[in-house]
Amino acid sequence: MRLVLLGPPGSGKGTQGARISARHGIPTISTGQLFDRQISAGTPLGQRAERYVRAGELVPDEIVLDMVADRLAAGVDCAEGFLFDGFPRTYPQAEALDRMLAASCGPLDAVIDLDVDVDEVLARIRRRAHTEDRLDDAEDTARRRMAVFAAETAPLRRYYQQAGLLHTIEGAGDPDEVAARIGQTLAAIAHPQLHLGS
Ligand code: AMP
Image 1: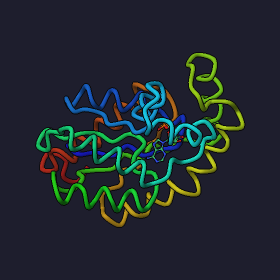
Image 2: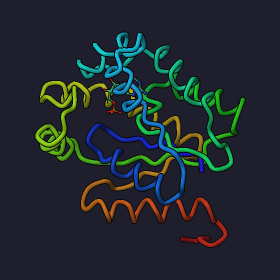
Image 3: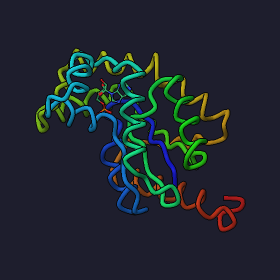
């Protein structure tokens, strides 16, 4: 399946993305992780991206799109599929992804939109700041990332709704329950004939 995982910072994309990958045997392509690696390795791309990541700002589209095009060119199995985590985050990125896929694998199957309340998300990010050493989990940076999500990324829900691809999943609560909700949705997409009327 060719999937996008959408949702604000701290909504559980990393956790749920790993589960979807394992369950469906598809790779996760996380642009946040790719940037993290490039920054740690001190590559030219990492150097261009670092100040944006540190500030909780979006890395400019052209840098993101070059990196994603390189990742796709490095090899994906179109039939098996993949899961994008944290990409696309802007309209130009979404449109570019459509073009890249039209020229290679074919269209997305679904966009999973993890819906979590802002206060819940900030509480999760605060907890994560204690347990993970992320560049961007300081309180003010986390708030900035939330504001950026609301302004730049949340409008993509409409883009994907119009394309008939959006599946909004309640992201609050136990990760096992969230995973079960996602599993049901993906099963219905993969085997629509078994889920008529549900
Ligand atoms: P994430 O781990 O997905 O929350 O990403 C961490 C940071 O990497 C973001 O706050 C951005 O600075 C940068 N980033 C990741 N993906 C993108 C993207 N698709 N567009 C722009 N910036 C991104």
